[in-house]
Amino acid sequence: MHHYTDALKKYAVFGGRATRPEFWMFWLIDTGLVIALVVLDDALGTSIPETVYALATFLPSLAVTVRRLHDTGRSGWMVLIAVLPLIGYLWLLVLLASKSSTDESYGPYPGTAEPLPAH
Image 1 (cartoon, rainbow, N blue to C red):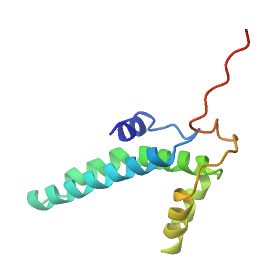
Image 2 (image 1 turned 120 degrees about the vertical axis):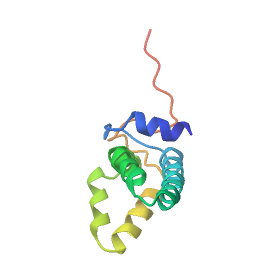
Image 3 (image 1 turned 180 degrees about the vertical axis):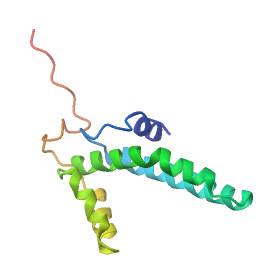
């Protein structure tokens, strides 16, 4: 659950990295909440709860996706390939599922300790 709340706290942080667990746990919880809200919308006969949630989580979702692309060593602009019908989403899914890059262009490799200061 902390991956979800961490992503919400970093709602406008487009720099840095998001590890695979951070990204996929965010999307798993997000998808579960969307499904629950769709059921609620159906029961209430309205689409207000899901619409409000979608608007509230759009920016955090975009930010965590851009950070995940950075973690794979790619530019955040690669998120735009999703606009290509069908193939774009599949291509983006493959990119998001790939291993972390050791390239430090977008910040230190996750899981590595920060260097100790010299005494």
